[in-house]
Image (tube, rainbow, N blue to C red; front, side, top):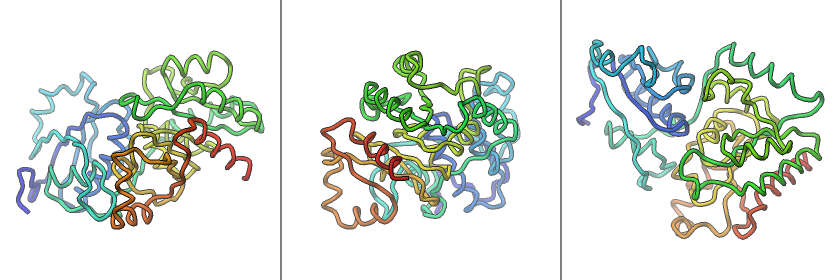
Length: 319
């Protein structure tokens, strides 16, 4: 198919992508498709700080868009066959499978069909990142596991975030079970929970920076007893791992926002009833059957904000 962004015959392409961390996890799926469709082309990526670990095994070079060493003007002067700005739009259900931003981007930007096996998350990490995480875990009380919590997103808060008072109570319950609650939130509410002594922060791992690298988050989540997250960057990085992960959904829906989970470690907790804009999906057997075949999920009461936390606690008690 001939499109404005047809890369046939190109040998060296730069892709610029500057979105949130969760979108970068999904963009790896786009890059996997491009590598499949254009095996003779070498791709480089310019993206946000801390995201390079998501692409390290797929690209020729990775550039941070904030590093002054690689200004836009300098990059443009390099001899790339094509330099493309890639955007993610809002997905609509028009494919007989997962319909996230990945299929939408592949179709709109490149005119390419989606391959289900390539709609999976992954992340590389470096030995020094793993060592920093191991050293931090060694600083925790012995014989106690760590349970990670991320409950406030960097964007779209009213459609994603969980109640901080419920999170504080959840931390108390985790402590009763000899688990160390670890907050992966940098908001004032998260800081208040840490300052109250109800949870700890892993910020010491990246204390020399104001952001965490994807590889560090991957190592941190992979070693945890479990992770409770929302539709956020950290929630998507958790989808790269094999440790138990619970993603709590409130106003969003995984069919549109979260790609496939080959490891089977992610359980999506959905409100019952679903929000009006997604409730109609249950009435479409083709869509709902596809969702049930692709995703692991359980329901919680939409009228009880503590219900998803209680689900996780019950899971811990039954382990």
